[in-house]
Length: 251
Figure (cartoon, helix red, strand yellow):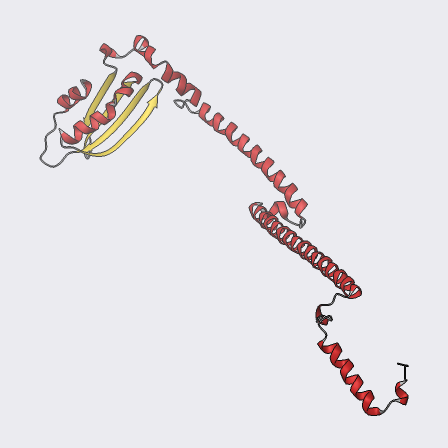
C-alpha cells in the first residue's frame, strides 16, 4: 500500500484514524502510568540540596550569634554587679573615715590612701595608750601588772614558809560597832584567798547572825587582802562582838 498524505485523504477518515491512534495510546498496556509530580529533576534537586545546606548554615550561624549575645549579656551583668559591690564597699569605707581625712579629697585612690593613714594613726594611738597605762600602773602602789600577778599566783605555795602571820592563822579580824550596825575588817594572807573566806563570812553573817549586809569592799595590799564588811543590825538584836570575831578567825 502506497503512502498517501493526509492532505489528499478525506476529513472523516483522518479523524477516525486519529481517534483510533489516540485510543491505542491511552489503552496500551505497554505504556506504564507515570506520576509526573514525583519525577526527579536533576536541576531542581541540585537547587534543593543547596538550599538545605544554606538553611543549615544560616541556622548554625544564628545559633552562634545568639550564644555570643547571651555570653555578652551575662558578662555585662556580672561586671555591673561587681561594680555595684565595689561601689558599696567604697561607700562604707568612706563612712568610717573621719571628716578631716577625706576633706577636699574626692577620688577613690585618695580615700584608700587616707584609710591607710588613719589605720596607722590608730595603731600609734593604741601604742601610746598602752604605754600610758603601764606608767600609771607603776606609779600606783599595790597595783601589780599581769606578769606580777601571774608570778605571785605561781609562788603562792611558798608563801606559808615566808608568811609573817601571827600563830599561823593567816588572818586578823577587827569588829566594831558603827552607825548602822557592825563593821568588820578582815585582813587575810594570800594563802587564805583560795579557801573562799569572804563568801563563808558573808554566809555566816546573813544566816547565823541574821545581819543584813550593807556593803562589802575588798582591796589588795602587797601579799594581803583586806575585806571591809558593813552589816546592819535589826532593832532589839544583840551582837556579841568578841564571839563574832572568834567565829571569823576560826573559819
